[in-house]
Image (tube, rainbow over all chains, first blue to last red; front, side, top):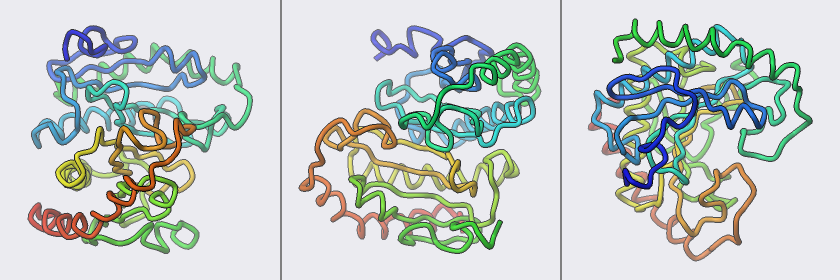
Length: 148
Length: 148
């Protein structure tokens, strides 16, 4: 799959941190459609399903997801964090970690459902403006967590 | 929240297995809308976010999710497993574990997106017909995994 998989041939977003097993990206295309607090934890090797990982790998993967979630909670105070590993289109293990807000265009529906209201570009810009601070904090916390 | 939360006051689906920390249910209402391979791992106590759990609790939670995923893969040979903890409507930690098929009404879109095609009731019934076998195997495997 490596030759045709977009997560084997590219980062899958704006790279925030890269470790030996995983990387964390900020999903620019999701920011463009109204979700500036949308990050991904992407397993570096081509594995389709979460249960394809060994137990210790699953633990490290979800420890990274929890770090991203915690940093987004601290920095953005979202109404809710949404976590998802779908992969129907790109079957290479990647976790979406999405900060959701009461004002966002889809809340409380999932980001993949039809929109509930107009976008709030001012609020979106305020979240987007936190991106560099979030990225710096993510790099610190992921290193502290020893997730290499 | 306990008094108004539906996952505090009810099982949240057809109960398959109940442990001290978690339970596993088959989501009947999702079967009714075309997803008979839709299960949930529900944390028993009222916790909103995954990162509210302690590290060892997160590991046990995801070990249960992986058991459910593995049993669905073995029993149903799905095109993909989808995992998600959203909780925008019911902020009580629950993981959706969803077996997806190329013939299902929404594939490869998420189950929350608009439908892609008509439902295939014959294929759905075949998956639904595996429910009891899946439930028995889940109870065995979750007990073996020592997830109490």
